[in-house]
View 1 (cartoon, rainbow, N blue to C red):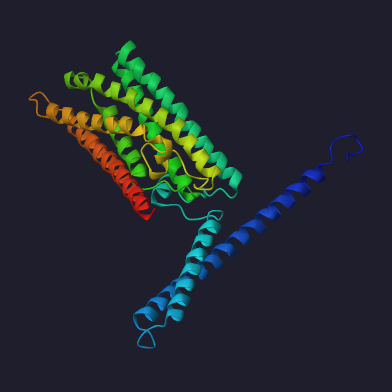
View 2: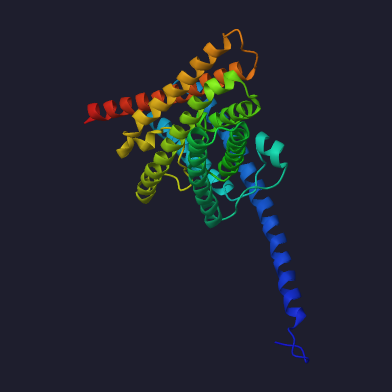
Length: 335
């Protein structure tokens, strides 16, 4: 439709935009209504849980009959299903940010409201990790073997700080949208950010040069292992999702989790070698701290950071391996 002069009709654009704003207001009202209803249902579930607990601890008769116990068990199973359903619903509703996201972004809503947007953001996160892993490997190689300038080293450490800071923010957004990465594999990025920041402030000197080559070689190995992890973990996740055994928002992580056991145990030697390299870095730095010429506080702080990374990575990986081994033993006994 056009105006008499042959130009476009401006009323069409205004009407479309007016309808768009109207639908946005309707969506906002529906979101508030759904969130309120879920909140009320959760409150009722909590009250029902307390009532069932009291019923089992203080039954009206001296002993509950088998039929009554079965009825209670059936109600509890139904409550678990309902709670899981609420979690699925809340994944598509706006929610309050956690403490870290609130400090960084404020109260901006980071919940993506459809599956396509969630998957697109997750895939973009994975590509970001892969591209930066390759860039960091090349950068570390350049600093180690081609150019030995403190300014270039500082630029490399600044890139590490930016990379880990960005990862922590992106991971927090992904967790808000249903990703189940948690525990140490989230916290170790905060430790890595701190460590990279300390390395960035370490001034040029004999002690810095003493540790420099060891640090850059370690960074190259770490990037190599992360590159391996990305390809093998992403392939494993793809197969498990196709079989319906993994959540669609699960991510590749810089460690070892139970779902990686199928065909990925070859990664364990690489991971454990990297963990003990972190221990070696820590011991090296603590020995440097004992030297009479050591005046930089960065030496001991980096040593402590590497020790925290080693203990967290090593014992978390060891715990996952032990748990998986015990589960396999139980399955063998049952067969």
